[in-house]
Image (cartoon, rainbow, N blue to C red; front, side, top):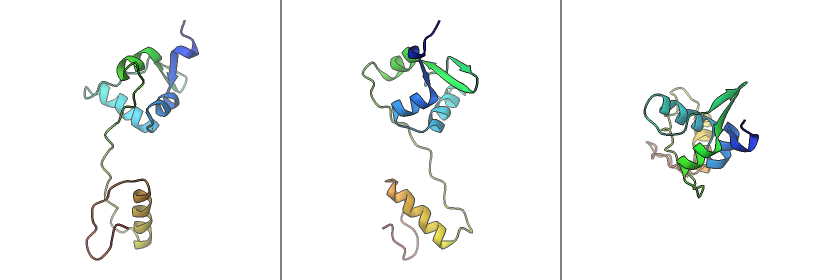
Amino acid sequence: MKTSEDLLSLVDLSNYFGVSESTIRRKVREHREGNGTFPLPLFKRGCRLLWKKSDITNWSGEDGETISFTPSPIPPIPQGTSAKNSAQIRQGLLALGVKLPTPSGNESNN
């Protein structure tokens, strides 16, 4: 029988790789669609997905290196968004270190 030390939850994987839970879910979906190699969960316990720790360490390497995932492209700010909201969105993305394209007109990225 597997012990809790042998199993990793979605939260555990998110913390281990330093990515969001939705990124882990996307990697699992990509594997199921035939486009990825991220280990599939061993089983689902209630609403929780659980992975074998050995599957994750074998996939990522024994040294526990950080895996960098390619982020999804940032969609454009929707038409009709107020100038104030648009500026807040841009400011938030810049604070996160997201490199944004130069806006048209006289606006600046800073």
